[in-house]
Amino acid sequence: MPIKVFNTLGRKLEIFQPLQRDLVKMYVCGPTVQDVAHLGHARTYIAFDAIVRFLEYYGYRVFYVRNITDVGHLREETGEDRVIEGARREKLQPMELVDKYMFSFFQDMDALGIRRPNIQPRASMHILDMIEMIKGLIEKGHAYVVDGNVYFDVSTFPDYGKLSGIKYEDLIKHRIEPDPRKRNPADFALWKKAERGYLLKWNSPWGEGFPGWHIECCVMVMKYLGEQIDIHGGGQELILPHHENEIAQAEAYTGKKPFVKYWLHTGFLTINGEKMSKSLGNFISIKDALKKYEADVIRMFILSAHYRSQIDYNEESLRQAEINLTRIRETLDKLHELIEEAKPGGKSPPEIENARKSFIEAMEDDFNTPRALAEIRRLVRAANSYLTTQSRPEVETLKAYYNEILELSRTLGLLQDYMPKKSGYPA
Image (cartoon, rainbow, N blue to C red):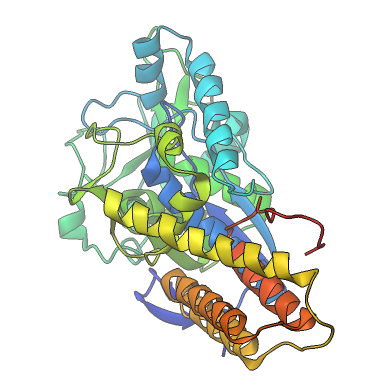
Protein backbone atom coordinates (compact mmCIF):
# COMPACT_ATOMS: atom_id res chain seq x y z
CA MET A 1 0.00 0.00 0.00
CA PRO A 2 1.20 3.58 -0.59
CA ILE A 3 2.26 6.00 2.13
CA LYS A 4 -0.62 8.10 3.42
CA VAL A 5 -0.08 11.33 5.34
CA PHE A 6 -2.44 13.57 7.24
CA ASN A 7 -2.24 16.87 5.39
CA THR A 8 -3.12 19.87 7.57
CA LEU A 9 -4.03 21.57 4.29
CA GLY A 10 -7.37 19.89 3.78
CA ARG A 11 -7.31 18.17 7.18
CA LYS A 12 -7.44 14.62 5.79
CA LEU A 13 -5.32 11.61 4.94
CA GLU A 14 -3.85 11.77 1.44
CA ILE A 15 -1.73 9.41 -0.64
CA PHE A 16 1.86 10.67 -0.61
CA GLN A 17 3.10 11.42 -4.11
CA PRO A 18 6.13 13.74 -4.22
CA LEU A 19 6.49 16.32 -6.97
CA GLN A 20 9.46 14.37 -8.34
CA ARG A 21 9.25 10.61 -8.54
CA ASP A 22 12.10 9.64 -6.23
CA LEU A 23 13.00 12.91 -4.46
CA VAL A 24 11.31 14.39 -1.39
CA LYS A 25 11.95 18.08 -0.73
CA MET A 26 11.30 18.77 2.93
CA TYR A 27 11.54 21.83 5.18
CA VAL A 28 10.98 21.98 8.94
CA CYS A 29 10.91 25.19 10.94
CA GLY A 30 13.94 25.29 13.22
CA PRO A 31 14.40 26.93 16.61
CA THR A 32 14.70 30.57 17.59
CA VAL A 33 18.11 30.42 19.26
CA GLN A 34 17.47 32.59 22.30
CA ASP A 35 17.94 29.97 25.03
CA VAL A 36 18.60 26.28 25.56
CA ALA A 37 16.49 23.81 23.59
CA HIS A 38 13.87 21.86 25.54
CA LEU A 39 12.01 18.57 25.18
CA GLY A 40 9.27 20.27 23.19
CA HIS A 41 11.89 20.88 20.50
CA ALA A 42 13.09 17.29 20.84
CA ARG A 43 9.55 16.03 20.26
CA THR A 44 9.27 17.80 16.90
CA TYR A 45 12.77 17.10 15.61
CA ILE A 46 12.82 13.43 16.67
CA ALA A 47 9.47 12.94 14.91
CA PHE A 48 10.70 14.45 11.65
CA ASP A 49 14.02 12.61 11.93
CA ALA A 50 12.08 9.33 12.04
CA ILE A 51 10.02 10.44 9.03
CA VAL A 52 13.16 11.24 7.02
CA ARG A 53 14.75 7.91 7.96
CA PHE A 54 11.65 5.95 6.95
CA LEU A 55 11.30 7.77 3.63
CA GLU A 56 14.90 6.82 2.85
CA TYR A 57 14.28 3.23 3.96
CA TYR A 58 11.28 3.25 1.62
CA GLY A 59 13.53 4.20 -1.29
CA TYR A 60 13.21 7.98 -1.56
CA ARG A 61 16.03 10.47 -1.65
CA VAL A 62 15.27 13.22 0.86
CA PHE A 63 16.66 16.75 0.68
CA TYR A 64 15.99 18.17 4.13
CA VAL A 65 16.32 21.81 5.23
CA ARG A 66 15.82 23.03 8.80
CA ASN A 67 16.49 26.70 9.50
CA ILE A 68 17.87 28.69 12.40
CA THR A 69 15.85 31.78 13.36
CA ASP A 70 18.24 34.41 14.68
CA VAL A 71 16.32 37.62 13.95
CA GLY A 72 12.78 38.91 13.58
CA HIS A 73 10.88 36.54 15.88
CA LEU A 74 9.09 39.05 18.08
CA ARG A 75 7.54 38.24 21.42
CA GLU A 76 3.79 38.55 21.09
CA GLU A 77 3.23 40.26 24.43
CA THR A 78 5.95 42.93 24.15
CA GLY A 79 6.83 43.12 20.45
CA GLU A 80 10.51 42.68 21.34
CA ASP A 81 12.86 40.48 19.34
CA ARG A 82 13.45 37.32 21.37
CA VAL A 83 17.16 37.32 20.52
CA ILE A 84 17.62 40.90 21.73
CA GLU A 85 15.69 40.07 24.88
CA GLY A 86 17.93 37.07 25.51
CA ALA A 87 21.09 39.08 24.81
CA ARG A 88 20.08 41.67 27.38
CA ARG A 89 19.32 38.92 29.90
CA GLU A 90 22.78 37.40 29.49
CA LYS A 91 24.68 40.66 28.90
CA LEU A 92 25.86 39.56 25.45
CA GLN A 93 25.73 41.01 21.97
CA PRO A 94 22.81 39.51 20.00
CA MET A 95 24.97 37.45 17.66
CA GLU A 96 27.09 36.22 20.57
CA LEU A 97 23.88 34.88 22.09
CA VAL A 98 22.88 33.37 18.75
CA ASP A 99 26.20 31.56 18.36
CA LYS A 100 26.06 30.29 21.95
CA TYR A 101 22.61 28.75 21.65
CA MET A 102 22.86 27.70 18.02
CA PHE A 103 25.86 25.50 18.80
CA SER A 104 24.17 24.33 22.00
CA PHE A 105 21.20 23.27 19.85
CA PHE A 106 23.47 21.42 17.42
CA GLN A 107 25.05 19.58 20.37
CA ASP A 108 21.61 18.60 21.67
CA MET A 109 20.49 17.29 18.30
CA ASP A 110 23.69 15.26 17.93
CA ALA A 111 23.32 13.91 21.47
CA LEU A 112 19.77 12.75 20.67
CA GLY A 113 20.96 10.99 17.52
CA ILE A 114 19.00 13.35 15.26
CA ARG A 115 20.74 13.44 11.90
CA ARG A 116 21.74 16.84 10.64
CA PRO A 117 19.66 18.16 7.73
CA ASN A 118 21.30 18.75 4.37
CA ILE A 119 21.26 22.50 5.02
CA GLN A 120 20.68 24.53 8.20
CA PRO A 121 20.42 28.13 6.96
CA ARG A 122 20.44 31.13 9.30
CA ALA A 123 17.81 33.78 8.70
CA SER A 124 20.27 36.65 9.19
CA MET A 125 22.37 35.37 6.28
CA HIS A 126 19.47 35.83 3.85
CA ILE A 127 18.45 39.45 4.39
CA LEU A 128 19.15 40.46 0.77
CA ASP A 129 17.00 37.58 -0.49
CA MET A 130 14.19 38.72 1.80
CA ILE A 131 14.45 42.29 0.57
CA GLU A 132 14.19 41.07 -3.04
CA MET A 133 11.08 39.05 -2.28
CA ILE A 134 9.47 41.96 -0.44
CA LYS A 135 10.18 44.23 -3.41
CA GLY A 136 8.51 41.68 -5.66
CA LEU A 137 5.41 41.51 -3.46
CA ILE A 138 5.15 45.31 -3.52
CA GLU A 139 5.46 45.36 -7.33
CA LYS A 140 2.73 42.71 -7.64
CA GLY A 141 0.36 44.72 -5.44
CA HIS A 142 0.41 42.33 -2.49
CA ALA A 143 2.35 44.58 -0.11
CA TYR A 144 2.57 48.27 0.79
CA VAL A 145 4.95 50.63 2.59
CA VAL A 146 4.01 52.81 5.55
CA ASP A 147 6.61 54.89 7.43
CA GLY A 148 9.48 52.48 6.75
CA ASN A 149 7.38 49.40 7.47
CA VAL A 150 6.19 46.98 4.79
CA TYR A 151 2.98 45.02 5.27
CA PHE A 152 1.43 42.14 3.36
CA ASP A 153 -2.10 43.05 2.23
CA VAL A 154 -4.17 40.01 3.20
CA SER A 155 -7.14 41.26 1.18
CA THR A 156 -5.18 40.62 -2.05
CA PHE A 157 -4.88 36.90 -1.28
CA PRO A 158 -8.37 35.31 -1.28
CA ASP A 159 -7.01 31.91 -0.18
CA TYR A 160 -5.81 33.27 3.16
CA GLY A 161 -6.97 30.92 5.91
CA LYS A 162 -6.99 27.73 3.84
CA LEU A 163 -4.39 26.02 6.05
CA SER A 164 -5.83 26.90 9.45
CA GLY A 165 -9.46 27.11 8.38
CA ILE A 166 -9.81 30.49 10.06
CA LYS A 167 -12.33 32.98 8.69
CA TYR A 168 -11.50 36.63 8.10
CA GLU A 169 -13.78 37.91 10.85
CA ASP A 170 -12.08 35.59 13.33
CA LEU A 171 -8.66 36.37 11.92
CA ILE A 172 -8.77 40.02 12.91
CA LYS A 173 -9.24 38.94 16.52
CA HIS A 174 -6.33 36.47 16.47
CA ARG A 175 -3.04 37.74 17.93
CA ILE A 176 -3.49 41.11 16.32
CA GLU A 177 -3.01 44.45 18.05
CA PRO A 178 -4.76 47.41 16.40
CA ASP A 179 -2.33 49.36 14.23
CA PRO A 180 -3.58 52.46 12.43
CA ARG A 181 -0.82 52.11 9.82
CA LYS A 182 -2.34 48.92 8.42
CA ARG A 183 -4.95 48.90 5.67
CA ASN A 184 -6.56 45.85 7.28
CA PRO A 185 -6.19 44.66 10.88
CA ALA A 186 -5.06 41.22 9.64
CA ASP A 187 -2.15 42.53 7.53
CA PHE A 188 1.23 41.35 8.79
CA ALA A 189 4.73 42.82 8.66
CA LEU A 190 7.22 41.83 5.99
CA TRP A 191 9.73 44.46 7.09
CA LYS A 192 9.83 46.40 10.35
CA LYS A 193 11.34 49.84 10.78
CA ALA A 194 14.17 49.87 13.33
CA GLU A 195 13.99 52.62 15.87
CA ARG A 196 17.10 54.55 16.86
CA GLY A 197 19.54 52.37 18.80
CA TYR A 198 17.95 49.07 17.72
CA LEU A 199 20.66 46.40 17.68
CA LEU A 200 19.55 44.13 14.82
CA LYS A 201 18.99 46.18 11.69
CA TRP A 202 19.90 46.28 8.01
CA ASN A 203 19.69 48.83 5.22
CA SER A 204 16.79 48.45 2.81
CA PRO A 205 14.92 50.50 0.18
CA TRP A 206 12.53 51.48 3.00
CA GLY A 207 15.18 52.51 5.51
CA GLU A 208 16.93 50.67 8.31
CA GLY A 209 14.98 47.77 9.68
CA PHE A 210 14.68 44.02 9.98
CA PRO A 211 12.57 41.29 8.35
CA GLY A 212 9.32 39.94 9.68
CA TRP A 213 9.51 36.40 10.99
CA HIS A 214 7.16 34.92 8.37
CA ILE A 215 9.13 36.09 5.33
CA GLU A 216 12.25 34.36 6.61
CA CYS A 217 11.19 30.72 6.25
CA CYS A 218 9.45 31.49 2.98
CA VAL A 219 12.66 32.84 1.44
CA MET A 220 14.83 30.01 2.74
CA VAL A 221 12.41 27.36 1.46
CA MET A 222 12.50 28.80 -2.05
CA LYS A 223 16.25 29.44 -2.05
CA TYR A 224 17.20 25.87 -1.20
CA LEU A 225 14.23 23.77 -2.31
CA GLY A 226 12.46 25.74 -5.02
CA GLU A 227 9.09 27.43 -5.44
CA GLN A 228 7.11 24.28 -4.64
CA ILE A 229 8.06 21.58 -2.15
CA ASP A 230 6.69 18.28 -0.88
CA ILE A 231 6.68 18.50 2.92
CA HIS A 232 6.73 21.45 5.29
CA GLY A 233 6.67 20.60 8.97
CA GLY A 234 6.70 22.12 12.41
CA GLY A 235 4.81 22.23 15.67
CA GLN A 236 1.05 22.74 15.51
CA GLU A 237 1.40 26.15 17.17
CA LEU A 238 2.96 27.38 13.91
CA ILE A 239 -0.13 26.73 11.77
CA LEU A 240 -1.46 30.21 12.50
CA PRO A 241 -0.12 32.69 11.79
CA HIS A 242 3.34 31.52 10.72
CA HIS A 243 2.58 28.81 8.17
CA GLU A 244 -0.59 30.51 6.98
CA ASN A 245 1.49 33.60 6.24
CA GLU A 246 4.17 31.58 4.47
CA ILE A 247 1.57 30.25 2.04
CA ALA A 248 0.20 33.73 1.36
CA GLN A 249 3.62 35.24 0.68
CA ALA A 250 4.94 32.39 -1.48
CA GLU A 251 1.86 31.83 -3.62
CA ALA A 252 1.29 35.57 -4.07
CA TYR A 253 4.92 36.00 -5.11
CA THR A 254 5.28 33.04 -7.49
CA GLY A 255 1.69 32.56 -8.64
CA LYS A 256 2.23 28.81 -8.20
CA LYS A 257 -0.04 26.60 -6.09
CA PRO A 258 0.47 24.79 -3.88
CA PHE A 259 3.58 26.23 -2.28
CA VAL A 260 3.67 23.10 -0.12
CA LYS A 261 1.95 19.86 -1.12
CA TYR A 262 1.82 18.29 2.35
CA TRP A 263 1.78 20.16 5.65
CA LEU A 264 2.69 18.01 8.68
CA HIS A 265 2.39 19.27 12.25
CA THR A 266 3.45 17.72 15.54
CA GLY A 267 1.32 17.79 18.67
CA PHE A 268 2.37 19.44 21.89
CA LEU A 269 4.62 17.93 24.51
CA THR A 270 2.94 18.82 27.79
CA ILE A 271 3.70 18.76 31.50
CA ASN A 272 0.60 18.15 33.59
CA GLY A 273 -1.49 18.89 30.52
CA GLU A 274 0.14 22.27 29.86
CA LYS A 275 2.26 22.95 26.77
CA MET A 276 5.98 22.91 27.49
CA SER A 277 7.44 26.28 26.55
CA LYS A 278 10.00 28.85 27.60
CA SER A 279 7.36 31.54 27.98
CA LEU A 280 5.45 29.45 30.53
CA GLY A 281 8.65 28.59 32.37
CA ASN A 282 7.72 24.91 32.62
CA PHE A 283 10.27 23.46 30.23
CA ILE A 284 12.84 20.72 30.77
CA SER A 285 15.97 21.33 28.75
CA ILE A 286 17.33 18.58 26.54
CA LYS A 287 20.63 18.76 28.42
CA ASP A 288 18.90 18.22 31.77
CA ALA A 289 16.83 15.36 30.38
CA LEU A 290 19.97 13.66 29.05
CA LYS A 291 21.52 13.78 32.52
CA LYS A 292 18.71 11.51 33.71
CA TYR A 293 17.88 9.41 30.65
CA GLU A 294 19.94 8.21 27.73
CA ALA A 295 19.07 9.49 24.27
CA ASP A 296 17.42 6.25 23.11
CA VAL A 297 15.05 6.31 26.09
CA ILE A 298 13.93 9.84 25.23
CA ARG A 299 13.51 8.86 21.57
CA MET A 300 11.58 5.72 22.49
CA PHE A 301 9.31 7.78 24.78
CA ILE A 302 8.60 10.35 22.06
CA LEU A 303 8.04 7.81 19.28
CA SER A 304 5.65 5.86 21.52
CA ALA A 305 3.07 8.53 20.68
CA HIS A 306 1.90 9.40 17.17
CA TYR A 307 3.57 12.58 15.95
CA ARG A 308 0.24 14.43 15.68
CA SER A 309 -0.96 13.52 19.16
CA GLN A 310 -0.31 15.33 22.42
CA ILE A 311 2.19 13.56 24.67
CA ASP A 312 2.50 14.26 28.38
CA TYR A 313 5.91 14.14 30.03
CA ASN A 314 5.89 11.82 33.01
CA GLU A 315 8.38 9.55 34.73
CA GLU A 316 6.24 6.43 34.36
CA SER A 317 6.20 6.67 30.56
CA LEU A 318 9.95 7.23 30.46
CA ARG A 319 10.57 4.22 32.72
CA GLN A 320 8.42 2.09 30.41
CA ALA A 321 10.44 3.32 27.42
CA GLU A 322 13.59 2.33 29.30
CA ILE A 323 12.21 -1.16 30.00
CA ASN A 324 11.23 -1.67 26.35
CA LEU A 325 14.63 -0.53 25.16
CA THR A 326 16.43 -2.84 27.61
CA ARG A 327 14.41 -5.83 26.35
CA ILE A 328 15.45 -5.12 22.77
CA ARG A 329 19.12 -4.76 23.70
CA GLU A 330 19.17 -7.89 25.86
CA THR A 331 17.60 -9.90 23.04
CA LEU A 332 20.17 -8.62 20.55
CA ASP A 333 22.96 -9.47 23.01
CA LYS A 334 21.65 -13.03 23.42
CA LEU A 335 21.28 -13.53 19.67
CA HIS A 336 24.78 -12.24 19.03
CA GLU A 337 26.33 -14.36 21.76
CA LEU A 338 24.78 -17.56 20.40
CA ILE A 339 25.80 -16.97 16.77
CA GLU A 340 29.39 -18.21 17.25
CA GLU A 341 28.23 -21.48 18.82
CA ALA A 342 25.16 -22.07 16.66
CA LYS A 343 24.90 -25.05 14.38
CA PRO A 344 25.06 -24.44 10.61
CA GLY A 345 21.94 -23.95 8.55
CA GLY A 346 18.64 -22.30 9.20
CA LYS A 347 16.79 -19.59 7.34
CA SER A 348 14.82 -16.41 7.85
CA PRO A 349 11.60 -17.47 9.62
CA PRO A 350 8.18 -16.18 8.48
CA GLU A 351 7.88 -14.08 11.66
CA ILE A 352 10.57 -11.78 10.29
CA GLU A 353 8.84 -11.14 6.97
CA ASN A 354 5.52 -10.64 8.77
CA ALA A 355 7.05 -8.14 11.20
CA ARG A 356 8.80 -6.23 8.41
CA LYS A 357 5.58 -6.05 6.39
CA SER A 358 3.57 -4.87 9.40
CA PHE A 359 6.27 -2.34 10.34
CA ILE A 360 6.17 -0.84 6.85
CA GLU A 361 2.36 -0.78 6.86
CA ALA A 362 2.41 1.05 10.20
CA MET A 363 4.76 3.71 8.89
CA GLU A 364 2.82 3.97 5.63
CA ASP A 365 -0.17 4.90 7.79
CA ASP A 366 0.84 8.52 8.47
CA PHE A 367 4.15 7.49 10.04
CA ASN A 368 2.51 5.59 12.90
CA THR A 369 5.56 5.06 15.11
CA PRO A 370 3.63 3.53 18.07
CA ARG A 371 2.46 0.69 15.80
CA ALA A 372 5.93 0.39 14.26
CA LEU A 373 7.49 0.04 17.73
CA ALA A 374 4.88 -2.59 18.59
CA GLU A 375 6.04 -4.62 15.57
CA ILE A 376 9.65 -4.42 16.75
CA ARG A 377 8.57 -5.66 20.20
CA ARG A 378 6.60 -8.48 18.56
CA LEU A 379 9.69 -9.51 16.62
CA VAL A 380 11.72 -9.46 19.84
CA ARG A 381 9.18 -11.79 21.46
CA ALA A 382 9.36 -14.11 18.46
CA ALA A 383 13.16 -14.19 18.71
CA ASN A 384 13.02 -15.01 22.42
CA SER A 385 10.44 -17.71 21.77
CA TYR A 386 12.77 -19.26 19.19
CA LEU A 387 15.67 -19.21 21.66
CA THR A 388 13.67 -20.90 24.41
CA THR A 389 12.39 -23.68 22.16
CA GLN A 390 15.71 -24.56 20.48
CA SER A 391 18.40 -26.40 22.39
CA ARG A 392 20.91 -25.52 19.67
CA PRO A 393 19.63 -22.73 17.40
CA GLU A 394 20.69 -22.41 13.77
CA VAL A 395 23.09 -19.67 12.77
CA GLU A 396 21.20 -18.24 9.79
CA THR A 397 18.01 -17.93 11.82
CA LEU A 398 19.86 -16.13 14.62
CA LYS A 399 21.46 -13.75 12.14
CA ALA A 400 18.11 -13.06 10.49
CA TYR A 401 16.47 -12.12 13.80
CA TYR A 402 19.48 -10.05 14.88
CA ASN A 403 19.76 -8.08 11.65
CA GLU A 404 16.04 -7.42 11.29
CA ILE A 405 15.52 -6.19 14.85
CA LEU A 406 18.51 -3.89 14.50
CA GLU A 407 17.52 -2.61 11.04
CA LEU A 408 13.93 -1.78 11.99
CA SER A 409 15.08 -0.11 15.21
CA ARG A 410 17.61 2.00 13.34
CA THR A 411 14.98 2.97 10.77
CA LEU A 412 13.35 4.86 13.66
CA GLY A 413 16.72 6.21 14.78
CA LEU A 414 17.05 3.83 17.74
CA LEU A 415 20.18 1.85 18.69
CA GLN A 416 22.40 3.82 16.33
CA ASP A 417 25.39 3.30 18.64
CA TYR A 418 24.48 -0.21 19.75
CA MET A 419 27.35 -2.66 20.08
CA PRO A 420 26.76 -6.18 21.42
CA LYS A 421 28.37 -6.98 24.74
CA LYS A 422 30.42 -9.69 23.09
CA SER A 423 31.57 -8.23 19.79
CA GLY A 424 32.98 -10.15 16.86
CA TYR A 425 30.01 -10.77 14.58
CA PRO A 426 29.70 -8.15 11.83
CA ALA A 427 26.05 -7.09 11.79
